[in-house]
Image: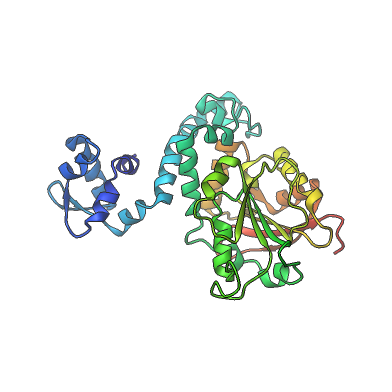
Length: 352
């Protein structure tokens, strides 16, 4: 709560702007015409939690943590977490009691709808609340900071680049539900894919990169998007319009949807696949049968509350993909047991 209020009062930005000179509660309150007494109560708690430093009575300095908390990713994460997810978890015990403690599977009458008194699906509700939608996209832009990137897990050269049909018309990757394009932009940077020959740090790879998401997300993404990435509005419940791409990529997308909806998303991809050529890459957590990390189990509860969905075990992923006409051809994981794995799948009718 204190961090969320500090964001509203621009506390961290103000402290960071004069990092060597302490600022008083009166100075920090003035920018937003806040009550200095209230501001000082928030500041003293932040100092007690070692988020900022209390240099003297009612005077404060930033810390490395407060510098980080000023970033759009953290700011968006706290806003979205408290305002969109917070009510879900405070009301979750009451919701579960009302269903005789059945595991939620209905994303129209689930915990999210119970908490927010809505009949809208989670993402429809978020899009209707534009400030929260922007907050979530800011959070997502920094989500994988410090996490293993998928190109360091999956053998991109051997499994994706080799055999790809390049040239001006060839599509290398379609990123479905790719938000503001953070995965594709990092792919460009890591793989040395400049806009044209001579740009980038490594070799220049052929093939288009296509970012897809809902219209409102794509509109945000276009600003400052790497020229190698083409943004396209697309509803992934509709047939995929980009045909014959080398890879269709989804990063933490399917865990937002229950099995029934997940199958529909996957089935909408099938007509676009070029047999024997196209691949499906799913970058998601795989719940181990024994000894799951608390980070994975916490994510599972978040999926339950917000989407009436769940994180999936390997067996559950296999069943989901096979139900939609795919087969898994490989799984790659990092040494971090809480990190997301990369699953590769092809059409079930493709030869081994």
